[in-house]
Image (tube, rainbow, N blue to C red):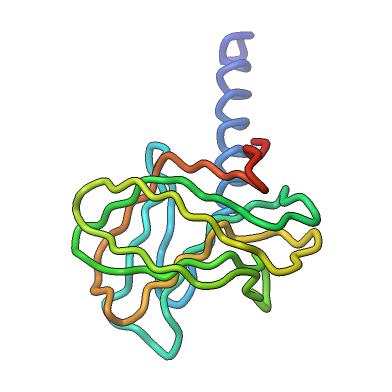
Length: 160
């Protein structure tokens, strides 16, 4: 059917697929972790077993301003099994250089608000993981959900 309404519907479908693809580029998972978006939440599935490196998930920000000294990240997080996660601001691409000290959070089955400030080393204009979550072998296979993501650079809200 080649009506204006059908063409409009097809255009909307294609635009939504393109938007999902851009979002997927800003979400990364390695070392056995699987990450996806589900109804506005980041869903991380952890592996059955861990290898030499921890399972990681990064939430990328490719619009990081040059010369920032700190980044504050606010979000809610929960998991289907109690576990801990380390968090660090890192380079989005290899070699995944760390630009902050490592912080640790405890995660359980209740939505918990987190507000964490990282003091940064020189990042230049490198796209960053804000943050990179590191799940070590103390984290059993399970699912972690993250929502309500807000980022501030040097105390000023980040542009979307």
